[in-house]
Amino acid sequence: MSKPVVLITSATGRIGKELVARLGASDEFTVRACTYSDGNEATLRELGADEVVHFDLNDESTWAAALEGVSSVYSASLDPMLEGHLAFSAELGRRSDEIDHVVRVSCMGADTNTASYDADKHASRAGAGIPLMLQHYWWGERALIEAGLTVTVLRNNFFMNHLLKTDCETIETEGWFSNPLGSARNSFVATRDIAEAAAVVLVEGAERHGDKFYDITGPEPQTMAEIAADLGAAMGKTIEYRPQSMEQFEEDFGSTRAEFFEYLSNGFYCRCSPDFYNITGHKPTSYADYLATPGVSGETGLEELWQGNLWKKGTDAMKDAAAVQASPDSD
Image 1 (cartoon, rainbow, N blue to C red):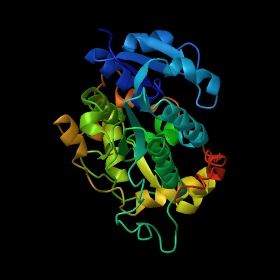
Image 2: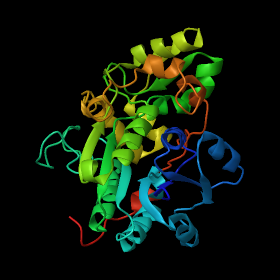
Image 3: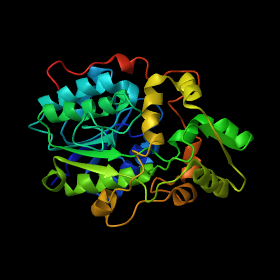
């Protein structure tokens, strides 16, 4: 009997590579890995992909071949690609009689975007609205739900290493990084843990995990000084954290990203969720362990730090996405 086919979007990303390796090793699925760029097929097959397909969220002509015979989907997309994801969600909905389960990567705070069930009471500066990025994450979830699909959402805390990628050059050459988070504590999450949770959820299936929403965090909330100490220990050198004003951060990366960082700076992402433990049976990976040890794809967190980054100083990567509107029929 043939195995069910799982489609892994963003298969060359930090989570995607780990998920391909885990599902390939599990032998529960035929693993179909998506790639946008040429030249990734050999690497993805070495990781455990059975099939590799070209896939572009912004090109509908690539969708049919990718979805042929698929019963489960791992759905992930970069923030600026929201519009493409919304269109792809509608296509998945048209195949809802074939697709049993979609696992979507999202962010803590999506849906109510708040520590309260009253969406008007949320953790931010006085008078500020819900960050647009968090609204976008919810729209990404809702598009799949409203398409009539059985969905499991992994609502993740901020990724370990993600906030440092914008300072790779100064970290490597001058030994320092800067951002506005200061002494605020955040339970940063390892991307390999997200992949592990996604693998378990996909293997155990929709019957157990369908229509559930899991907050995935790290094992402890850390300040920037503690992050700098862990990074320095992994690199064998002293790394300094230099505080930055929110005004300068907004100038560097734009208002949409800055309003999201206000949540990181005010304690909203401080808590440690039990959901990862409840899914996998063990505690999340610490930042120090993430940096020093390899995941199943073979990379340590320190090796991963120097790889690609969406956010560039002086560029508002969310400028176009900020213009995307929710469906007029949605709340």
